[in-house]
Image 1 (cartoon, one colour):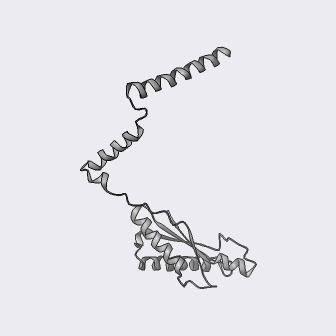
Image 2 (cartoon, rainbow, N blue to C red):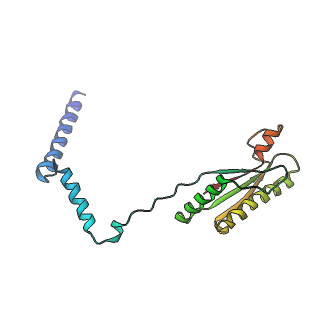
Length: 173
């Protein structure tokens, strides 16, 4: 075991010394980092390759998930500033990421039949898709689906819980 430790130490010292000698003495790169960076910058700025001189466009962040809530048995909604900001961010993100799609999933509370709630969830998602389409998001870049009452986020036995379950979730995939 002692031989292994000594061998490892000798190897580590040897590799550090060899790296130092090569970088500093042979290549002459030690103590010249400031000058080298300045030379690199001036070389890059003198190049006539337009792609190096052009500032990079900022990459839009994914706007994440947005929830839009609905009144009981309704699929109309009113927009607000937050919805408009989400649409702007989504548009920007989707222009920079051509493979991205918006997914709109409609949900309902548990009042009513499964079939009715499934259809109501689809109408809610479709209403959001149409609104986003009117704001410039291509319809072929957005998908709708309905979960109906199958995926509640809160208790359907309280009015507050049912209100939270009447929603459409919008995400970018």
